[in-house]
Image (cartoon, rainbow, N blue to C red; front, side, top):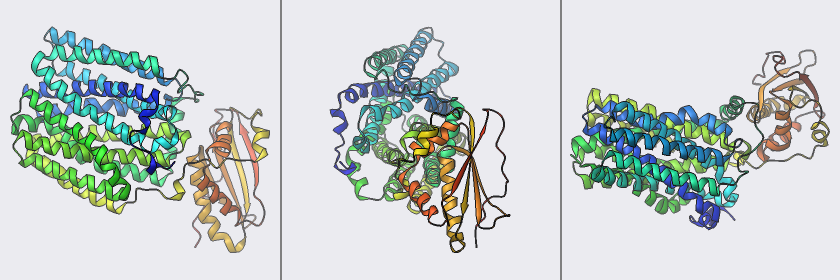
Length: 542
């Protein structure tokens, strides 16, 4: 079954997925209610644009601080434990905020602290949820799950602000926090009931920092991943102006009531859901580059419109467009990552993508708050619109969709050598693998070209270092020394992590040789420094 043949709602036929979707929805709704309440309380209280924008920083900062550790342990300590713990923590902080509101001691510090903890809970849920999805649905359904997941998450943006605005306007701050505490408690119960007990209970890495280092090396040595992160930043910086300045626009330009602010904010979520339902067929017909460029142009129009349209209905209409553009672009990033990143590193890489997006949102929100206080609200919105237009032009020029070289399926290995050494006493120790290549004189340039790709592959798949040099005492002979944190990483690279395209490059490299390459294994006790090698690196052949 191909991704194009899978219906958007097909994953909902999976019972466990269907029962767990309310957890994602409930946590997201509750957090957006908290964010809206904090923004509006500070806005009507007369705080500056910078202070109001800091609410978005407080919501996004936990993703930056916790995203990588959570991504590193998401498939180790257990998805159930993390989801339940996050839900319980959210219920607890909401209950505390309700008590403080009753005592009339809710100020900037209390609101920012509450939003920060809420952001931490949302970060935990978002990252664990992405790691949990492959355990809930089969791979063919993953072609549409990111889009459906975006609809649920952004549906929360529609429901949360409207509900939050209504409760805040009708019953006050204390009732608002009590309501979200109840929602979070229900989410904890559902997660404890439905998340599989063994989901995410894998073999623990040497340390979570080592786990993160492996994912970071994968991204560093993947040009496609670096490009994706660059494009995310190009979209994220100007897009954060909307989230940071919308409360100021609603209060100063629209003179909106609390409930009207909820409606304007909720229109973003309505647009996101509509965009998910209506734009998926368009994404199938357009290239990914054209699709995200179209979304960026629409978002730029929205930012400019916020500066000139003076009515609640008019800005609400713009927010519908903004929500559709937002989910169109963001879901494309996630779909692309799910299609390209191999399963063994996917949870960690997705965590880094989420961290990057939220870090950009936090930095951007603070920046636009400062710009609005310095230059004024309208100039800040126009500047962000111009930057978004420039981002759209970038999306048309920089390739997003990966080709055959990005197929994530493992190549597998039938080499009996790995079976012989898998259970040896080398396991758990630092390893060096020295490989010697005798190159045909007429294929030297081709060897150098393909060896560069092989080196990047080694580093993506687990090597902490890989150097290649020519043996000056034996011209035409090249030596590669790859170093691994532990021997198990080398075995995993050869047996499990090597993908089909990378296997093709290795086969092509072998065609440049006079004879088969020879390999020698070098071992050191764990922690005994680094295996040394000549630092003369492979040079481009003219």
